[in-house]
Length: 346
Image (tube, rainbow, N blue to C red; front, side, top):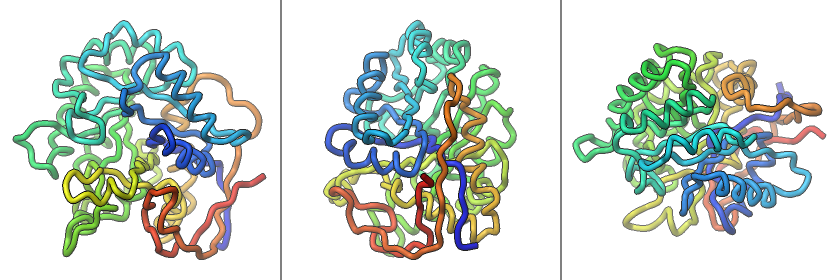
C-alpha cells in the first residue's frame, strides 16, 4: 500500500508553550491534528476560567486563520485548588480535563502534588462535573529511584479508580509493562496515552554509550521489554490506549545545557509518520485510525455536537528528511529519513 486516508487525528497530550514558541509550534500541531488536549503547565499556570480563555485565544491566533484546529483545554490542579472552582471550570465548553503533576518531577512542576489523597474533594468535584483527570504518573519522593517512579505511582492510580468509580482517569505517557497491565485490569473509566517516542526509545537511547539530550524526556524511556509492551498496547485495538504525543518543545540551548537539561521531545512534526512506520512494521495499519482518533473521541466525547464533515489526512509513501531545526527547536529524528509523509485532504 502506497497511500491511505484516515480521519484527521486527535493528539490527547501536547505542550504548545506560549509567547514566540507558541507561534512556532501551534501551526505544526494544527496541520496534523484536528484537536489536541493542551497541557496547562505554563508560568504562571493555567488554573482559572480567565487563564483558560486567554490561553485558548492565543492558541487559536497562533494556529492560523482557517486551520480548523480546536484546542481542548485543561487546567492545572495544584495543592491549593479549591474544589468549588471545579463547577465553574466545567461550564466552559472546551475545558475537558484537569491535569495533576507530581512535585518537581517534570517541567514547571515545582508547584506540583505530593499528597494526592489530600485532593479527594477536588477529584470528587471533577467526577460530579464529568471532567477527566489526567495524571503524570510518577511518584514524587527522594526515596524512589527515577526509573521506579511510574511503578510506584500505580498504587495511587488504583486508589483513585476505586475511590471515584465514575471519574474518568487518563494515565499519561505510560512507559512500563506494569502500567499497561494495571490499566488493563482497572475499569473502563481508566485509560492511558502512549507517545510515539516511547514506542521507539529505550533507556540506552537516552544515556547508553553516550548521552543524547534530545531523547531525554519525563518519564524517561525504559527497557526493551517495556517498549515492546507499549507497542503491543498501541497496536492491540484496545480502546483503553490512545495517542498522546507529549510533544514538548524546548529551545536548542535548553536541551544542551551541561546541567539542568530540559526534559521533553519535540515530536509534533514527525509523530504521525513514525506511527505509520511502527504500525506498518507490525502489520497493524488497519488499527492506526482507532489509536489516533476513534478511541480518544470515545473516551473524551467533548460536549457539543460535531459540525460539518470531519477533516481527513492522507499518508503517502514518500521518503523525506526531517529538518535539523525548526524555529530554534531540534525535532525528534532530526536529520533522519522517514518513509511516509502527511497530506491534508482538501
